[in-house]
Structure formats: C-alpha cells, structure tokens
Image 1 (spheres, rainbow, N blue to C red):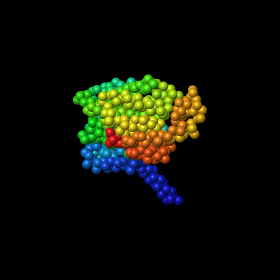
Image 2 (image 1 turned 135 degrees about the vertical axis):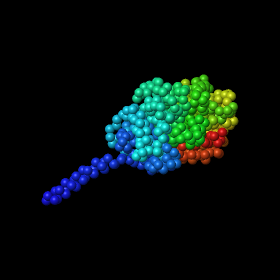
Image 3 (image 1 turned 90 degrees about the horizontal axis):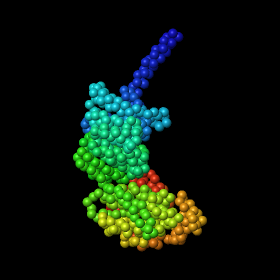
Image 4 (image 1 turned 135 degrees about the horizontal axis):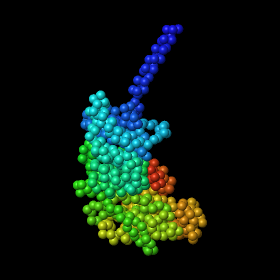
Length: 552
C-alpha cells in the first residue's frame, strides 16, 4: 500500500511538474485562408513574450527572408480601438503571406463573442515596435536576422487609424495607412488635425466611398496635408466596413500590400497604381495623390456642381465628372437614377468612368424622389417626364465644348433603365451606346396590378413605395409597350442585372435582348436589385466601364 501511494505521489508530482511546462510552451495559432495567396504560407499566432497581440507572419520566416530580404513590419490597430483583430484577420494574414510580419493589437479570437472586448491603449503600438526591435537583436529569437526594424509601417481601421496617426510621430515609422479613417476636425483616441503636422513619412488613406462615415474626414485630411506624399484610394461602394472580410482580405488587402511593397520594399513598378491611376486590378477604386515637396499632383478628374433646366423651366441638380486629361473632346455619358432614388445611385459608375477618361453627368430627376435636389413634385413625375428631363440635359451638354457629341452614351438604373430605353428610342441618333442596369422594364405591365388603383385617378397623390404618385404617372403608362419603342434604337446596348433580381426579371431581359439589334447581356451571379453587395456592384461596374470604353 505504501509503495502504491508513493508511486501515485510520484506520478502526481511529475504531472504537476510537466503541466506548467506544457502550458508555457503552448502557443495559440491558426491558419487563415489556407495561409493566404502570397508566396509565403502565413499563420496567426500569439507570442508569450508580447501579450495582448496577434502576430501574422510567414510560417517559415527564414525561407521568406532568404528570398525577400529581411521582412518589413506592420503594426496594426483595430476598428473601435478594440483589442481584437478578428474583423481584419483575413487582410492582415494576406499581407503576411507576401513577406511581412504584422503585429496586431489584441489577443487572438476565434469568435467575436468568445471574450469581453476592451480598448487597446495607444502606447501598445510603440510597445510593439520596441518588442520587435528587441527580438530582432536577440540571437536566440526566431525573429533574429529575418526582420527589418528599419522598415516599420503603422496602420489602423476607423478608431485604430487615429491610434496609428498618433504612433506615426515616432521616427521609426516609415509609412502610415489610414483605413476607413480620417480626423477632419474631430478628436479621437488622442489624435486631432494637429497630428497631421507630426507626419514625417508618406501616408495612404483607404476609404469605402461616400457611404463610409470616415470619408469626409479623410478628404479633409488629404486636402490639408501638404508637406509629405499622400495618396487617397477610394473604393466607391465598400462602405465603412471595407471588403477585408472577403477571401484573402478582398481588394483592401491588395491595395494595402501594393502600397507597402512600394514604400517598404522599393517595388517602383507599383508606384503607377498611386501616381498614374493604373487601376486595372482595382475595379471600382479611384485614386488621388500628391507630393507637394516634389510639386507633383495626381488629380485624375474634377467634380463640379452643374445645373440644367428642363422644358418646364425647372432646375435640374447635377454633378459633372470631368477627366483631367489631354483630350479636347471627351466621350460623355449621362446617367439616370431609379425610382425614389437620387444621383448617388449612379455616382460610383460616374467616378469609375471619369477615372478611365470618360466624362459623366449624374443628376436628380425633377420630382424623381422625395429627397430630390431638383425642382418639381413627385405627383408631377412620370417615366415620360423623366425622359423629357434627359432630352433637356442632352440639349445642354451638346453645347459644352469638351463633349464629343459623336461619342455620347446613356445609362439608366432600375426605373432609370426604363427611362433610358424610352429616351434613346425618342433620340435614336443621339447615343452611340445605351446601358440598362437592372432595368425595371416591367413597370408598365405591373402598373395596374401592383400599384394602388386609387393612384391612377388621384389628383393629389397616393403613396406608392414611399413616394406620392398621381394620375400623371399612369396617364400614358398603363398599356404602354416599351418593347415596341425600343426597336427604334439601333445602336449598341448592354443590359446588366443580377440572377437574384426579381424586378429586372430574366424573361423581360431576354425579351429586351431579342428586341435590340445589337445587345449584350451580363448576368451578375448573386446580384440582387440595385447590387447592394459590394462584390456584385464591383463586377457590374467593371463590365459597364469595359463596354463603354470599347464602344466610345
């Protein structure tokens, strides 16, 4: 009995001795997106020597360094200044797979709710630089000889961008990236507009279009910075959440990696992305950049508010996107929005066209929505009054000296697509191309069956899908056959819609294809009406721009 007891005690002592060693030796890690798309399979892991951070790095750093040279470092702060990089891990992992060591604030998570979130302190970014610098000097460290602490970048998303801006004052920082972030006139996490004056190295802003809540502040920052190189990369539809949740971190990861490769690895062939707008691999992105120290300014297009007047002498609010190129006469596209919408529905298409040398005009239809900036009431609106607005705009823009009237096109979205079909049939020689984006060609057929019958005779208006309509909308619409009219247009047509769209239904699109003499149809997989998903909108935009550049 005594022998057995002693044996149990010995085993227990051995287990108690080994357990702490096992716990200490265990490092939490995971593989994301099978290691990324870069040349070096990456991993995410925690380091026991630097708590409350995740390190994204090549699994075999020595192999990566043998090909790349010593690996640059990116220190990352998270959205909300939170202590988790989980929402950004696909992007950070992707960067690492291209030969970087990324230190992200906050301990590792597998789910956003697996622990309470806290705020990461600003000083942790400097601590991360201190830690990696110390590790790179220790011969027994795996980072020794493979990390280049003379090439450190700081970056952050949203509130994390403010933390990165504060850290940018450190002399070790060679570049800064603000993701969905900008200071403007506010104060956040210790950063203000005065922090911009502390910048001493190039900075990149990456935002998600005008729907990104950080957009306006980022624009203000860009305009104020005049002492260092600055680039402004704008994904037109991604919003504040970017697209870094997609496989391999989406286009945000590719843009970030391209910038880091240029700034930290000296890949000068990538400079053209930021200085000459070579955005073939970045559909639906626009770019601005300037380096006032070298008197270099890259502004690919100019945006200006330009109004027109319709045949009822009503004011039409609009915005002109004019390419800043050497073409004296420019191809020109008029873009029409949908029902109860605004010029913003077509803005992404206009900006992408302008980036590609095509001038574009977007506007609000008179009475076209409850929030229209143009004159007129919705009870005075119909698809035919909107077609008349298009005709009035055509008369105006033909007088602009920079417009090549032989290279004009008309694009319409949803109800605007129906309007574009009507307007082009009324002016068949005016447009070299017509683009119908998720066009609502079923409106006439559904007018009686779907819309309230009271609206057909109403003088004062009946609300239909959030907007008052009157008999004016229905007077010539009920029984109208747009397909009979579409035959009058014999130019180039492109129809773009999604396979999940119940309004731009496939049978109507097929009927339209057969009606037009020269018609291309692009069906976007997974696309719903309006392309609310950034992924489907990017694909549609890419197809539209490619078609118009080819035809115009």
